[in-house]
Image (cartoon, rainbow, N blue to C red):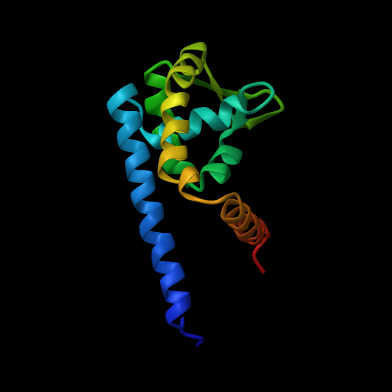
Length: 151
């Protein structure tokens, strides 16, 4: 077992605590100003970013870092609010497609400036361009590693 040394522990803890605090702050800003959770906002962004504004639930769950079951409950709430709709995948009847609605796109259009302002204020503007590049490179490497099939 290779335990974390002091510098490694400081990096890990500052990442964990900062990430939790940042997500809480971004959530609160979206909830207070637009009555949408950060997680719901992220689902809508994922769907909106697709050329046809839709994704298979299994793919969406992977992008969200969520289980299919948890995502299904979340999408059901979004569907009830009229922000998304679900349908059987025409290419694979076992799969389900989720699509953002015009109402979901309208919410995104209203909420996006609040989200971007928060990301900028609470993260991006606190970092130099060099630090931004370092963070991007480091987490692109982490993401690539985590997306590799497990052995």
